[in-house]
Amino acid sequence: MPSTEILIFAPIIVFLAYFVFGLCGFGSTLLAVPLLAMLWPLKFVIPVVVSLDCISAIFMRHQLRDKVWKKELYRLLPFLMVGLGLGAFVLTHLSTHWLSLCLGLLITVFGSFYLINRHGLIHLPPWSCIPIGLFAGTTSSALGVGGPLYVFFFNGRGASAEQTRASVPAVFSFTSLARIVLFSLIGLFNLQVFFAILALLPIMAVAMVCGLRSHSRFNRVLVIRLVGLLIMVNGLTLITRTIFQ
Image (cartoon, rainbow, N blue to C red):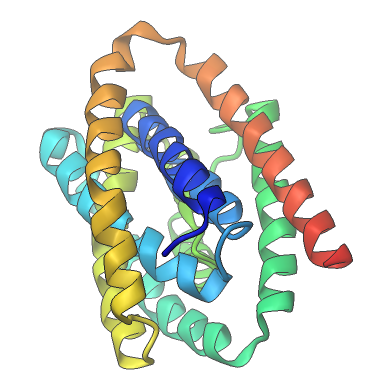
């Protein structure tokens, strides 16, 4: 039987994370992974969140399929897949302590990036898909987060806000499926993970619908900055908790 703390906070965390995802098209893992990692071990959290991400991303991609920037998506995907394999190796060979510390540092950097709202200020050349794809794939598998790098890539290549909102979930749908296969092969899925996914799935679905319906009612720049603040606080909290645990 899960603890009272898990029963209370896990649904709240998942609702917040996937409401933001429905609203912006990214941000779910940056919110969900560090917060859930305070309730469960990181190697349990990542397959749970990846499975929820996969379902939500496929739904989101279907809703926004006409706005996906396919040319840049297909340019990025091969290098992402290589990075995913590297990240799975890191996940299985690095201790939970160091994984949590790396996650906290990465989350704090990404949160700061969102908070100052520098999206799209750097023009990226076509070959940037190679280092970004490899690094994003590695962090996505090893730490469960890669979304900010996808946003950075599409904005740097000149995508509109709507193209980015549609293209990032399309990337998630491909990478999440690949990670599920990889995590199954290395033995990260078990009955407890499946029970957690089934319990949290309805909450994720409700949050997604609420986020999609609320999209036009919020100032996108303000939402991104607020999400950045929340993410940065999450990262700093995770770092502090990992160091003094």
